[in-house]
Length: 295
Image 1: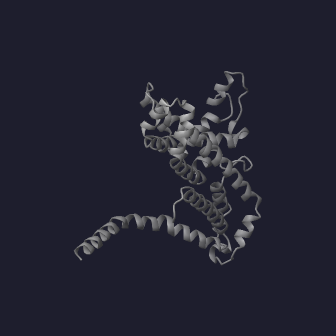
Image 2: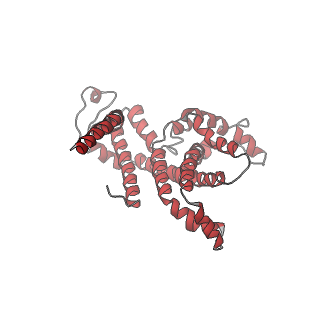
Image 3: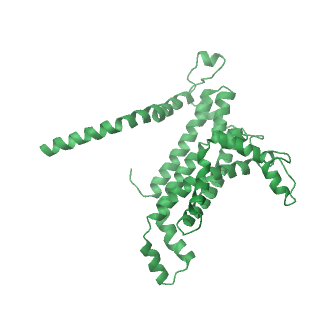
């Protein structure tokens, strides 16, 4: 009996500790998500008659959305953006950095500080900084560099807009990938590598047969976090290109902003946001299934 009362008291204490986090989660995650779902079934707007008297329109926003070529273009651009910057760029460079930092290299602290430095600048500040480097004209940083090799300078954000935002987002995300993958590498016992070396395994064989399989849970977790966070990237892309030129960099977050606050159609923008939320949930479910966790 005393044990049960002690367990109940401990449960109440844990609930009291978690209560502030639960309130914040309800206020800033669950409620906005539910309200967005509600808005997606209305013709809510910022101007006009719908702003004064919004009404329920059922699935009209979703019907319009799935027949909107610009929406499908934003999904395609987002897919390329996520694959290029999060799955390929950040993962590959983050893994290389994590492996390098586990070796006795010179200037190790300087190297890690350089990788972590991009996270010190807010998205918008980083965006304007890169604008000065990628702008057209002979005085832009990248144009000066390529001119040394006889390459004609260009307005890089106009000529290669999607490639440039992939490069910039990769630059900002390497540190996160490096930290998470370094944690995964540290969980692999050194004795396994020693035994493999004694058996005559080459470094490439140890990487393919030991490192990658044992790091797969960490890699899958990183893929989920990076994919979902990259889908939500807004400030960096908006500062660099605002979704242009001609929708070439109009990722889903920019498309939602344009529909909600440029075209003033909050209901339609909410429908797009709900679809983006569903995509993120599908990625989360895929991660759980990949980890073979029962929920």
